[in-house]
View (cartoon, rainbow, N blue to C red):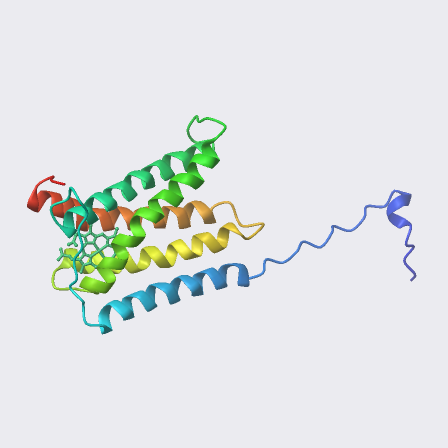
Length: 194
Ligand code: HEM
């Protein structure tokens, strides 16, 4: 039997256009990068001798105070991230600039967190002498892994709608646990001082 190439134009239903098959690399690469980043940070924190160096900023009483306030700033902007994401997804009423607010609050949160984490990794290392500190070290490494995955996924097209909210939620959850196990602990132990 020969197929008439003009069949579709003669009233016959045309065959469904083949759907592009999802390319697993779109998920695999970010997942592998996340694992590599988290494991590399943890391994570095574990194998090097913690330098124990401290630094200070004018107006602050200790390294811990500077770090706790920076971490609190990062956590504040992470909450802005959560609220602005809910606005972008239409779950909360929000202004037209919600997406811009989401991008900028993310950048500020990340910039505040990086110097704190660099000091943690370099000066204190990966520690597990009590469960709070273990969770803090674990989540510190996980945070940078899952953050890298989120940045890579943002560049991908045709992602399932649930993926970014889940990965973004993991980034937020990690930062929340980091803050609870460090800055909140610091303020409760030494008082809310600068
Ligand atoms: C977003 C990332 C991170 C933030 C915002 C953060 C924040 C903080 C803060 C505010 C403190 C309390 C101040 C101090 O004792 O110096 C702290 C302590 C500490 N951090 Fe981090 N940190 C992060 C990542 C990490 C990572 C990746 C590690 C190691 C793998 C780590 C290990 C530690 C340790 C061992 C302590 C001392 C805990 C204690 O004895 O109370 N942190 N961190």
